Length: 403
Image: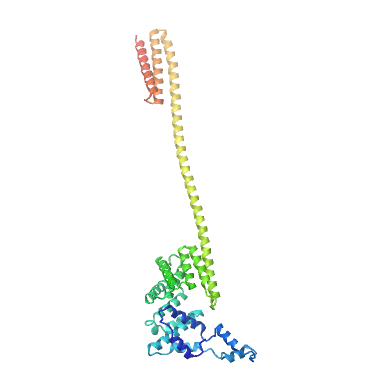
């Protein structure tokens, strides 16, 4: 509890350098406590009361403690923040009061007043105080981080360049990356370059190396790992954040609730990814099956076409054979009839015609054999002999016909 304006000035003058991580913690503690007594202070005051204290209600107790009047803390902060300064010591106190007011407005979610105060004091503090850039980044993150993604990420990197040893500044870059990439998870057109995700994870790791025991750093690391697809490690980091969170802080319940919300979101996303992978595997298997069926169908079509072609060829050959056999039969019958008629005039001529007919039949038989079995092999040689014999007999028959 700050009991007077002079006590507040003493606390502000004793603050460490603004580039150090402890500076932000001290300022935020002052913004949260102000003139309100802590539980320990209440306990100390109540335990100091005599047993026969004549306090019948809480109002008398507050009046006895001097807490029944106006809370002057906010007025003291405004006076210190708006006053002119003539030296570095006074400027330090003035800027610290400004930081306290910004912390209060941010915790109250008073965005309009937060930006108003930020813009009113930009000219006074922006150039000379590196911590101003960190507060400005927090303001930007409280608006629409996606719409101002480029500006936010550049500001975060600039802050790290000015305060490289400050774990909170590194964590601010990690927070910015997490907020922006989560907001654009399903909007790739507005998502920044993926290199920023790597930068955010690196910044988060730097913050954890400097201050491993700070719970929120682990939560942010978990969010970034989930964006990278490392859901198991992400949930481990969230669990660490829940374990490390200080239960004595006034916002303990809010922070735990936030951590559990991120854990549930990451778990849901992990399950969705698993289902998606299974569906993709089933789709791939179905596509492979369809391709195999299409290939089998094409193969069946090819074989069917070849079979149809072979059938048509066989049918054509059969028809040719039938035609040829019909011709042979007709030729034989006709030859015998002619030979019978010629026998009355010339027996030798009739016999020669029959011999020619026999030679022709042997020649045709040998020709069919060659067509069916080819020109090579034992059967081809036999067919060639029969062909020669048939041609020889036909020649003898022709000679007999002219005798």
